[in-house]
Image 1 (cartoon, rainbow over the protein chains, first blue to last red):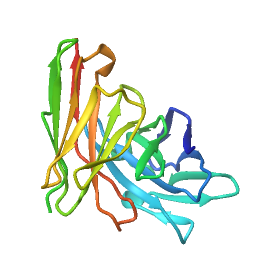
Image 2: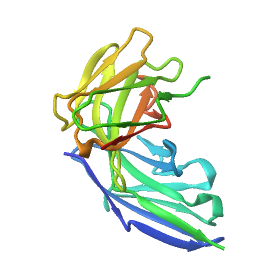
Image 3: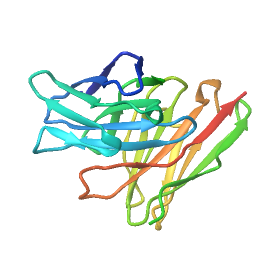
Length: 113
Length: 113
């Protein structure tokens, strides 16, 4: 069965600093992996996805993630944090024989001036 | 292109009551998935509808039921509400052949007292 572990429920960075949000997955089949962002009192917005092909995936708002099969990881990065990046971030794997998303518990990102 | 919409935005119910939540999928999408997001947690898959048929179900009791209509909009019904049903209910729509991207609505915040 597929699962996702997000390391660190809270991450705090300074504006302009590197953002690194960690995600490890478990999957018995080649995984489809996603990162979503959730702003307060809103739904989820897709940041980026990995299905097949290039392992470095670029998404919206300057975020990118690298699929590393040997490490079963799909960490999310952004070179320079903006105040507007403060939100909850969810890593997800698709599985279960149909297109359901299995989410991690989320990481809340705080950005300080 | 119209995005995913959900109604109502908020509602408050009493334990034991029944509730119906509604979702309009994004134009052209024939699959709707429902998720429950308890406070401080990642979304949990409830079930999915594809062309008006239930296409998969998560670990939720039968008092959680759904419908999908010919225009691909959907309803989530919850009977005999319990306090633990208090959560944000998210609807996501997708279309086959689009790399499994799911587009989320803003959610319905249900409070059970």
